[in-house]
Length: 390
Image 1 (tube, rainbow, N blue to C red):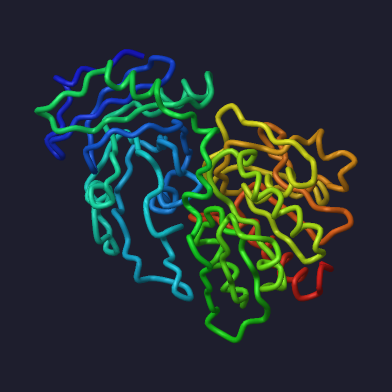
Image 2 (image 1 turned 135 degrees about the horizontal axis):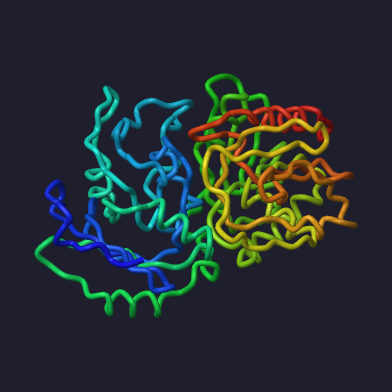
């Protein structure tokens, strides 16, 4: 893919230029928005049409440069954080943008009565670079063919210049995505508690390796008091505080979280009800002796089909993960396959045959949707209230 001529690009809206270099040598030029900066990350794509505020604030995207396949992004602007459930903002999945950079085709001005900012201004205030006027679908085709890869994104004023050789050197010297412990970077530094709007029915602890606000909203909506523990917390303090435990989603390679894997092993064998979501499912699998592998280009978007192998019912789910549990490794571990991906047949959920432990690779909370599998939280609620029995 040849660089697009900057001379032919009109970047008058932002007066910023941008360059994106992939590790296979693909070089893309376009217009910049947000904050002028150079960032390195794993380049991935999402098939979302809407929900960019949720995706951009999802901690699971830490360390990644995100491509958006929909041709126009930013139409409805950025909403206020005033709308909330039990103090948790509705339209955000954390308190900040987590992507290293954002690449879109076109960046229209917002037109929505709830918008308080443009996407570009939000990125500028958050000190995150963005890129537009790019053929994102051609880039996605390349990632589907070759797999996700490392890349470097640079945004700079139109009267400046960032040389391709400079970007090449920065990319070559950068640490690879799968070697970095991102989960500890996005985890809260101390214990955080959230109270439901009515009398709590029970207390749920969350081992927070980058939890999405949507998970907290559902737990609070169901009446749980929620206590979030940093990803490096000891199992004893977590178990003493709660009637059930959620092992959260989060970014990066689960295999590098050795301390968390040992913590999860102790939690699983405690006998208390456990729900693993996304990274949490992978940590549970690893703690029990199963294996995890990296997907070629991952599952990212709100339109991913799964089938419940026990009931044969299919569901549309939201997903954001680049690793998956090996189905072959579940044998002889008392782990029963629960959900399978309709497209590539990968594991999307499992349950323990002897312990009150269930895990899903997808996001039952949606954020931004769909909500087909929100009943997974109801299943967990029954486990907590019935001391492990569904």
